[in-house]
Image 1 (cartoon, one colour):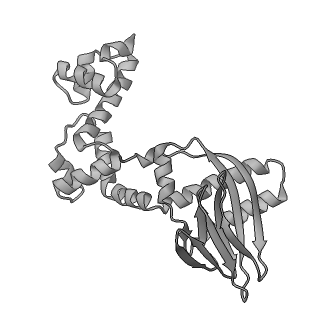
Image 2: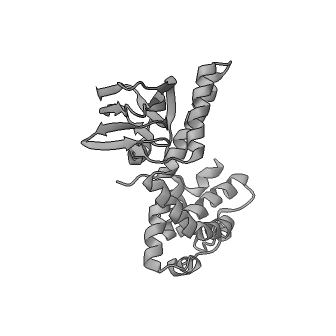
Image 3: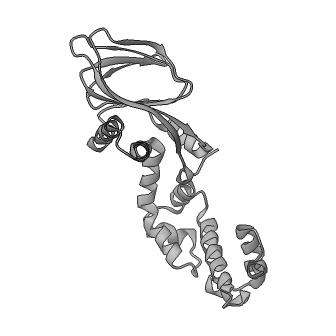
Length: 265
């Protein structure tokens, strides 16, 4: 099953702690597992070796680690260049299925993160350590932004943005001209794509076929127009490009869930 990643939502329940650590030359972890917390870690200097799921990664400055709860790992610092890092331990709750899939798409190891991401780690650590009034709220706000940045780098989100670039003109055209009934070929031409490829990526991005999406836009506009009570049902149908009143009523009920006559009740 494919989930609509636009519906992703995260609720940070608790930030357990945020700490900057500089290891000594003997530092190591052996099969460390947390079943109640998630871990974000940004390497700020030195070097270390991490192992999980039969993978071995050499960490350097600027690398990021993201461990979901229940993930076991081992590590050891480089004695010649003791590792330093910022670690954030936190709990998440109320994750819907779309969010779980999206979070699962974030790799455990992200090398050479953008400077903006590294700066967020520093801001969270400074805020948490200073503990000025409101520090928990500010720390959570920064962590939300950090998680959003990471989701933006996930494979699905990158692919979604690629589709968005192709489809933005078409989506705007449909939303601005909801009284027009476009064919798939006409919409594909606007994107300079073949109809078959256009149909495929449109469904992946929106969750609808091009015709279904147009109907959705038409019916949501129709619902808004009916709520004003200035138009008869037949007039609203015409305003959204549908000349058959019976077809309009059936489509409205299918999309909105109630017949158009009930909107005014």
